[in-house]
Amino acid sequence: MSFSKWIGAALGWSFGGPIGAILGLALGSVIDGMSKGTANTVYREQSPPLQTQPGDFEVSLLILASIVIKADGKQDHRELDYVRQQFVGMYGKERANHAFRLFKEINKQKNISTTQVCLQIRQMMQHASRLQLIHFLFGIAKADGQVTQDEINQIHTIAGYLGINAKDYESIKAMFYESTDNAYKILEIDKSATNDDIKKAYRTMAKKYHPDKVIHLGKEHQQGAEEKFRQVQAAYEKLQKERGF
Image (cartoon, rainbow, N blue to C red; front, side):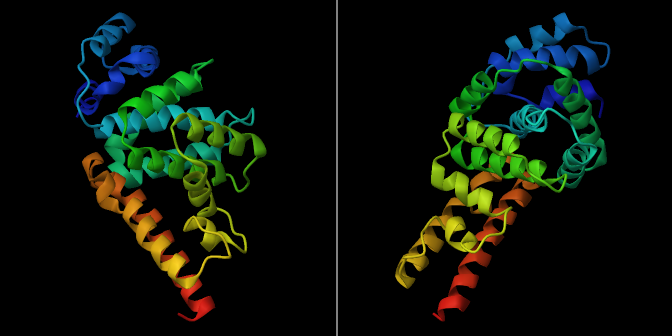
């Protein structure tokens, strides 16, 4: 599949608004035989679908990944390798190569408006899919072995603009960083919770993070959701063992 066919088939609402403007510049550099002017025409003519398409999620992910990688003022090759590896794992080598070509062009752009991009995503993308974006961004931040405060601050800002509440944010963050109360944070409860509270929280979080919540994004994105789901199960089992219920 050529790059132009891949990008044309994969995207829906992200061809418009501020994300479309970013795409217009990026596509002008990479699309097969297509000028910047043609790329701009393409995204303006699209009508947004009722549901987020896999390509909309991909492009949102690439743009937000670029923002996070730049947050500490430097780009580590391990972070870039993480993005590539994740895409190969999700999409296979050919599609991942297309996505990474686009990512490199997006990554060259300066002054991308985090606010505008996130508000477009918040308006058009379902909540479960936005949670998946945050999960991926934490993975990128941790890829070089250390997470800077600038990266954490940037992801926190993105989460706020995406409409992710503080408990959901801390739950996903706890999946990447070890602490004595991680299991409680993942289940969005505190240490004073009763055993019944823990059971109730587990049921709530298992439903929130169930892979079927992102089934519309395709099997490749369900893999990331399955990882969150396993973390919820592991947190519950840990507390079961500690408390003996």
